Image 1 (tube, rainbow, N blue to C red):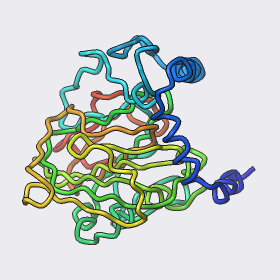
Image 2 (cartoon, one colour; image 1 turned 30 degrees about the vertical axis):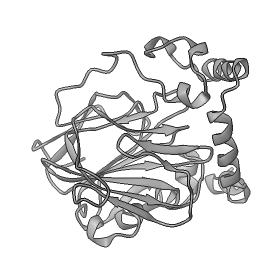
Image 3 (cartoon, one colour; image 1 turned 90 degrees about the horizontal axis):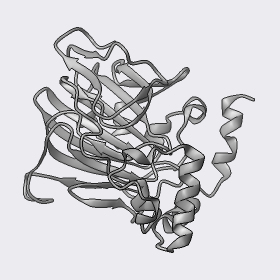
Length: 290
């Protein structure tokens, strides 16, 4: 079966209704029922609870609190690198942005402008730059951390579809990451602007950031924007490399954009490779992006 045929049912599913239902279930506090659901999930997906700050399944009053569980202190040491991997997960794709086109899968690309919600001026900063698309599976740790030091300047909520995110949909849904609901976070760093985008998916109940809290819901069907450090949305927000910046309540994908420059990705990186928070992602000044 072709990938396009495989994803056809997703065009017909009531994805937003399913996601709202999943969000209600994940936030419910139902004692033994919640514990049974968490235990089933741990067994089905092979979640390593030994890494959790609290490994006791019964200690989590809701599925969301289990899903966004903290790790033990020191579980993810930071590599000596300009940019560290911000998540546990797997590499979808990474490399150079060709003009303004981000590679999604064979035969599919999408524009930086589409990803960031239509802002041509913001997208222009990443022309001929680099990108990394990282997928978080159900078993993974679902907090997102900073790849480098950064000062938050903007956050944009972009409404959209809620296709599931996996290798099949990446190959079968054109412009997947620029079609799904997403939260675009813009930082200023020592090497210029950085975009870190949290991409939603089917049953991803919500996305949250450490400075704002839950961004969605509400799902109002319109683009919303917050600016920081200019008195409009609050005081300046500065985060250090490795600090938590956000989390998925039921997870999906992170897409990062970097400006043009001599960015060299970790030579061990390859599509589909498993990755861990804190490992070397890239360094500036070594050689052009691969």
